Length: 582
Ligand code: ATP
Ligand code: MG
Ligand code: MG
Image 1: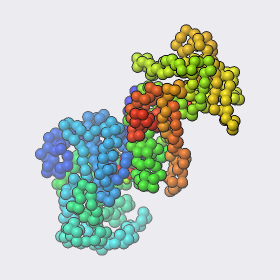
Image 2: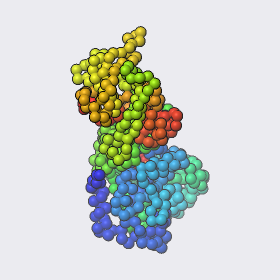
Image 3: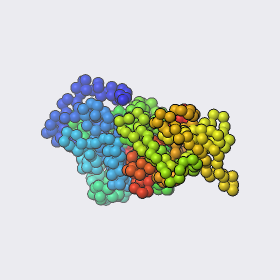
Image 4: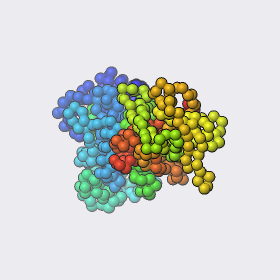
């Protein structure tokens, strides 16, 4: 059991709560403006956070950090975390993505139901309010319609050392701006011909305050509002309003939005002045995004890999998407543990992929049932074991949980063993099968290797041995013969033939897309290997998403899509920590 490490956001929340900062808030169910809020009830939530993805792709491991943080803080402080779609960019957004995102958040173990209400929100539900807010800004002299071309606007924005040049439209009267803005909305102007801009300061050192665009004309069908709108709010305008309408107390985002915070505060302050929003207004806090080695965490690049069929879809087990990670076999608990371990800070850094694998092992080791799999099979014949006969061997389902009981599987004359467990010419320190050496067949007998058969090319095709009948595991004679090697096996006649998919990192470069590199140049062509393996027959009863530790090999999962009774398919989630030294 690990406790959540204290982080700077927790300290801010604890400070706010101690100061009773949110005690006067009224809650109206969300999605309401100031006049509506006044009629609300005292807010049952001590704090409100939100997870606000744009539905333009599947979530990735970076999002898990934000999910665990936002939902985790709400849980820890008696608050509520809103699930909100930031769907203000219709061309890239789709219902498929909405569905996959909801699925991933629930899979991770979080929900948006609290205090008898569903806290599932869509920015597009606020388009009317956003439009009214824009008209208010125009009326109050805080916004104007700019008819410069995009190039002119860019050129007049200035640089870090030079102030921007005011647009010739900057001082147009409010009434005229309002007429133009209404024309924009009515579809009387072409896409891109004009934008609504906030009127702040063209000389501001922070470029984001040099009259940022807040509405644009875009004739695009929206996956929820259809063709109701031909103008859409910019993300930087929409997001603070979404937070305020939902009475978010702590709006937590990644560091690249730090420079947007002054506009966030400016906008909300103007709308509160105008009586459109109520105090206390939300506050934005930034934390460092997750960068995971050997992975890319950008929806755009992940989409590119899907579209170019570099991977087999969003849920390809090699993908760092939550759908892929799930299909690979990761547990939600292991992702939560990973997020706890990496913590939350303001310093950008790379997290090593081994931390993710370590969390998986630490989660699964105490709970995954054990089983035997032979991945690279070689026939072993026990020449002194009667043909046609078999006997039961027993092994614990879990070595540290005897209460879980035992599994039973047969031993017979012909077995499958790993090809690596036999050699004719043993190197120093090799304790497994070689002519004249004795090893234990795990949970079975001690056998002595007598030789091997080869094909015309000199490849070993069969290994021969003799068993020592008094040495069966679990019998009094088990320790009568001491051996150093202990190998796993399955009975050839009884084994379950299965497809096993072995995965490696998707990229060979730990930082595949940093410094402007082409991430596709670093793709690992051998990241997926499909083999035919022989498994312990008890695995015939597995179900999709059942996870096991295949002894000596690592953690495996029955594939959630392709596993079928009679047609088993397993994915390797992660190897064991190297245990060959033992
Ligand atoms: P992408 O660049 O992959 O599209 P995004 O930030 O545009 O990511 P959003 O859908 O806007 O994706 O993300 C929703 C939330 O998840 C945001 O609050 C964002 O800050 C957070 N988030 C996205 N990527 C990461 C990351 N790598 N680490 C931590 N949080 C992240
Ligand atoms: Mg975003
Ligand atoms: Mg994005």
